[in-house]
Length: 278
Ligand SMILES: Cc1cc2nc3c(=O)[nH]c(=O)nc-3n(C[C@H](O)[C@H](O)[C@H](O)COP(=O)(O)OP(=O)(O)OC[C@H]3O[C@@H](n4cnc5c(N)ncnc54)[C@H](O)[C@@H]3O)c2cc1C
Image 1 (cartoon, rainbow, N blue to C red):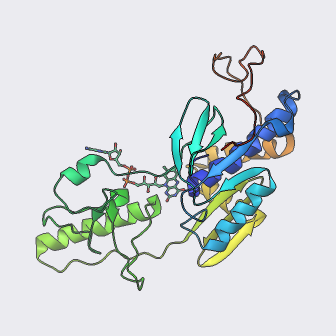
Image 2: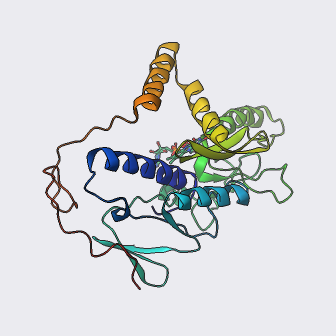
């Protein structure tokens, strides 16, 4: 797993959960120790958008379930059967999930507005840019939070993007009417992340939550956003059945010559050994 932000940690947790269950039930000949999982993160902490102790908790949970977590370590190169990290160390693997973040489309920087090193628009709290006729909102914009002492920009989340849009619409009308524009303000309801195995971490209304309760809130929130009572009931029944009988995986009969085990079940040689090497 490359990248230990919200998406990376969630994917790592869910993937490990899934692989462990499927291995035990459908591939008993593959020993538990034959599957090695790594999470490699450039920064010195996981879940950078949450308080550091939440990232430390996520790390502890993942390590307890067998993940090797490497912090402060960049992924240098992804080769066919190995990944080069840090100072040239290699991890033998054919399965890499990359979750190293997103960049705005290059068009944003080319449009003539002032951008930072990553191509995000340096916007004002009113979402105006260095070009008087251009505004910027959403993931491509760095909008300073006027309520933070250091003016830290708002996180690139949908939670912010949809609210920025409403504020921006009002500001465009204000500009046309010759009234002063107002800054975007929003106090986040919270951020929750699953780390798999029915555990989660997060901050809700400023309160830190972790463990089963955080996972339950995370699931509950997504369930509450499922549109329509019909779908809500279907999803709830499906989740209840999964809790009772476990996941119901589907195997696609797709043969891949480079995979360790094709759909025929014939074993290909493993990728060297399962230890990291210098
Ligand atoms: C895996 C994942 C999980 C996430 N989970 C959450 C979550 O749980 N909660 C949350 O709040 N946020 C979440 N987010 C973040 C959320 O998806 C984004 O913050 C949100 O989509 C930002 O909206 P946006 O409109 O700014 O950008 P986008 O949704 O990326 O939309 C940008 C659009 O611009 C289009 N575009 C690009 N270039 C051009 C061009 N030259 N001309 C015209 N159109 C162009 C693109 O095709 C795209 O459709 C998640 C993101 C990811 C990747």
